[in-house]
Length: 377
Image (cartoon, rainbow, N blue to C red; front, side):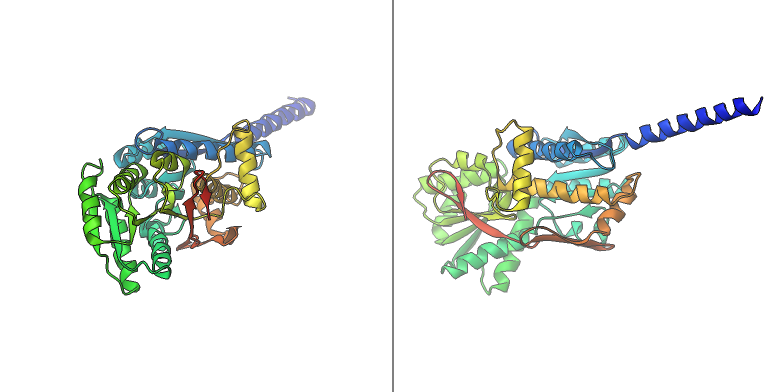
């Protein structure tokens, strides 16, 4: 073979190698998510999906991650922990480099061991516990404060306005009982004890009994650790029974669906918030969130605290992907996130990651619902 032909052959091989490398570089980066797209938390799951897709679509429109698009693969877990764990196994087998936004404390607890076994980073979640924050949660990167932080903010508000007779209503499952334990600890640190602790059935079948117990306890304020459907049933029946006590709900319940379900019974209901007002477009992060969601929905966006939280969570994942190196592997993403150090995401909302350290935000605010059905701070 003459030198000219050898040169052409070498050039052809080099070109094919370059094309192969380019094709590999341009492969989509797969992100997995198991969300409650049906079942009792379907409204929140659907909103989470809408916002996550909007965030990644905005990223892709701006060039993606080193020219590679980020694609979200989503499975419905119906708000069932076993189903969520099964979904994570499927997503892990499909080659996703990360899991995004597990939904609910019980779900996050179910998927964390599966993610850890597959060395699959679990980036943020709605409802987390201490297992997600220490060395045991190497593959977990949380953003939101703990339930303990939320309840501490509730109790601080109650004691400030003279509400010292405090009741606790919790759903009778692992999620609710963890909230009950958190409330007990918070009250003890405030040198208080609950005037009554009431377990509420998952299907809400004993709500009337709980309302009777609250009336007998003469609670001035009530910490509610329950998902929207049972929290709504509790508050509606309490108001219909003439109970005027103030109810304090977790941030995951601060969305329009719960407000709509409460109907005329929103007065005296307080929610914690974990992010700034999603309607304050003067803040850059809020403006970016609004633009992304509005662009993805054709201008029909319905902004919310949950939506902004999901968007901020997506921004954390995107930052990690940018720092994960050219191949964006699972371990590379872990290293990229751990190399972020402390990052301010919004006013008073920051995270700090390092090897063996997972410090989420500690910001907790409060909001109520106006007569017009809007959240006010």
